Amino acid sequence: MTVAVEGGSRKTQRGDGPRRGPMSRIRLSYNRNWYAWAMVAPVVAVIGVLVLYPLGRGIYLSLTDADSSNVGRKIGVNEIPDSFSWVGFDNYTEILSGGDHQFWPHFIWTIVWTVVCVALHYSIGMGLALLLNRKMRGRTFYRMVLILPWAVPTFVTVFAWRLILADDGGILNMALEWAHLPTPAWLSDPFWQKTAAIMVNTWVGVPFMMVSLLGGLQSIPAELYEAAEVDGATPWQRFRFVTLAGLRSVSSTVVLLGVIWTFNQFVVIFLLFGNTSGTEAQILVTWAYRLGFGQDPRDYAGSAAYGVIILSMLIVFASFYRRWLARNEKAV
Image (tube, rainbow, N blue to C red; front, side):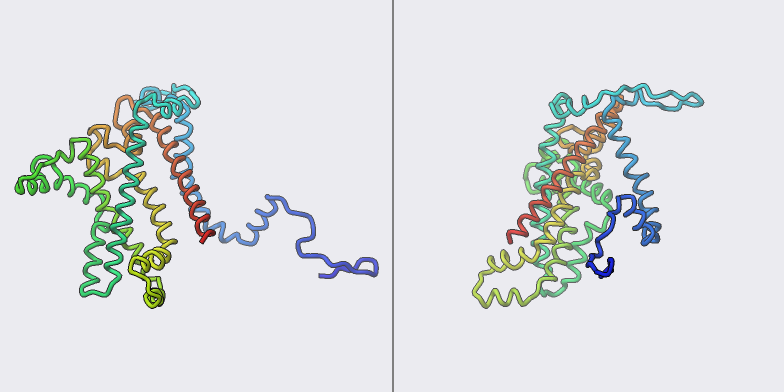
């Protein structure tokens, strides 16, 4: 664009002119895309009410000594105001320093639970996806059967497993007793509680991983396998350099989702063992629930602090995980 200046001319670029501030850019964006803002506004409002307000309230309570005895409540026509005090980061210090003697055992078990479950989800899901990706008779039927554990509501699945794993009269223990094998106390012994929890969560989580990986397998061109076979690649080399490489983007996403979901898998642990079982099989989220709703007095501040710590750990993990993936993709 040329602009005349006193008989001469100078060339200017479109970016010339005074720079706009943040508010000016927002106002310009609103004027151009007001309809998009209008469509997004209800979603933002819902997120603010259902997510942002509880999060802010939880962070605030985690900095106090709030419990069921000093939180404001209404009894009949009488209204009792809040009487809890501001304690700053004392709750976090007590939790992370081991003052409550519960965080680190639950943290270690939560890490083990997450790693083992996600590893089983991915490996079993990958094996089933590879089998279903082959041409075989009745493949559609097998897909429907393997997806059923995912389609059935989780609470129904967990209650069914409670009947199977019951210490007395459970189907599994009856079968083991018939075969003259030891009958573990699946729902009462701490070690077997953890084993049972991993079994049930694996049953619940494998179908999602299988379907996701199957979709990724079907997107890999068959010509790549043919070219690798012509070049003399072994089955393991074809799996490593064609299958796994083609599933890199899908695998990174489903593993990240699997870690977040399993780390916060409240339903399986809570419904399988209830709120009165021993503390050894409780992961961080179920222990936070017990602090806030499963004891008297209810420790709202401690439960909120656990929630903030859990959220912070997942945010840090997701950030490092995405950076690690981006670094590997650049290296490739």
